[in-house]
Image: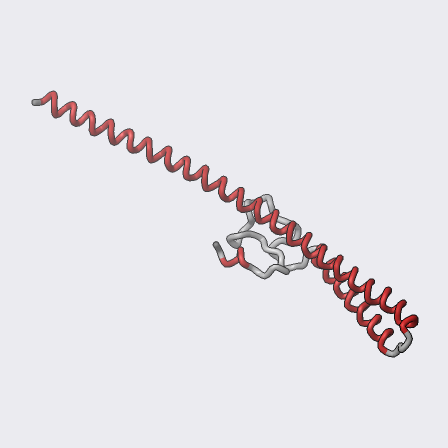
Length: 146
């Protein structure tokens, strides 16, 4: 496996071997090191979730009565946790998209390798067939001479 196939998961990768995947399966911004829209959404949701948790924490920290803390827990705590959950879901969706793109590139690469091997074996069989025919002709000539 090439070194570029084991790249950082937050950056888009253009291919498995430095060039394009197979010429047509490139994603927008592939290989440029830019974040995808799903990664940006995940990052924004995670930051919003952490901010909501912080606001909830600071709101609860100076309240003594439970009934005064509940609004901060619901909006800040629960809201922040939901936003972080959405961030995780967006990042997983991005990873799934990248896995599919890589799978398509690998399948195309395997198909090209199979076609190359088939052509190579076909040529080699033709060469062997011609060599065997030449050998048989030579044996036939030697037998006819004697």
